[in-house]
Image (cartoon, rainbow, N blue to C red; front, side):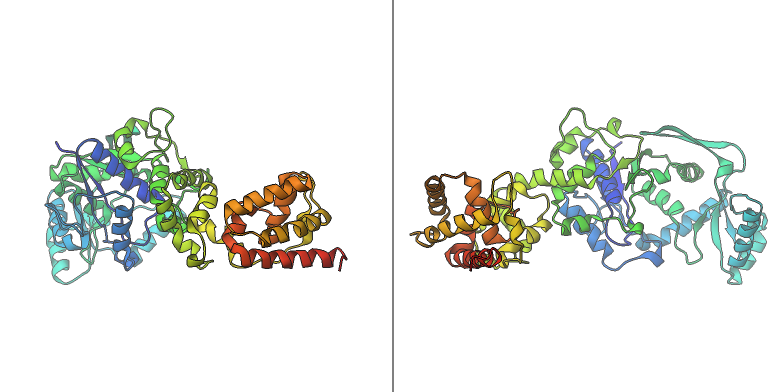
Length: 487
């Protein structure tokens, strides 16, 4: 049997990290085994639908390289791939389940259900439907349907015994039937719930392996009862450990945790995000941590999936993203950095390859660039105490002396390039009999207003150019003279 996996998100907003990891594992398993990866949209929860969410899902999967073989926007032999477009299918199978005694019509009102829940809570019993409508005769059911009375179709789960199945990660899973409720299969509006739709669609689309979150581990037995009732083969199951924000809290878009789109907007590379989430709950053989998507396909093995929750570590993601940034060709780095550079500077006025050289090896995420390079656009206000640096033996007094020595040297340069500035400053260091830092540290502050910059004083002076560098030097010298009482 050909391996066929599916990713079946609900189009209710941006794709969350946990959802993307599920898609990734489904993709990796299919491709590792020469199979097909299918995208299906489960949009039966009509109240939670979000406009454009489907387009976000398409774009995210394509941006991350998770190309699906069949899906709503590309078609395929098993479509439609949107559940609302398959609505007519589910009524048929729900009624077949009724005929086989595996489901029944329920006419209970919201008021009765609320009263039942209240009674259960007062008795300290887990709220559960009491099979009240299962005793209705066929004649009464038909009469009430013809009268236009609203109804749902509920699954008829045995009261006694237990249902077991094998999961490829968690092994044998057994659930007492008494722990499961007669969930609704078909709602009063004719739309199926997940309980029915995922079974029908997975069967009709010939899904061989269902890969999804651990939250479905204990409810899978009730889906298997539907497979059995309809006489269908049960797929293989691979349930995934949760992705946690910390030891107590699960990562969740409902609680405002970052989506894939959030990370991209912050300047994380799609390849880095995919690489990182692949390792959230799965351990490859060996010590390798940086993987291309093709390498992940070759390395992926279900045996490496952990049963324990995975903690999402943003710092580890930053480290990995930095590794990917450093490996970029200069041209690609500049192209990716451009939207962030344009937030703070006129890119046509600066040497972009030089900016790349001083920032690329120090950058973790592109969104940090505007803050790191803000001094290029405008000289910030700063305190002269910033010139104090014990290790470099620099004080505001010594800084003033060395800056006044450097100013005419910079002013007289034939060409204001990095090499000319470097040679002139090194010659001045020798002439003054001081160490490099005693000159370059105050020079950096004088032209940037900060002690920490992506590049050194020489590179920054070259970036700023002659006029801007000398203007900032003049302002900083004047500032020191005023505050030291030398004027």
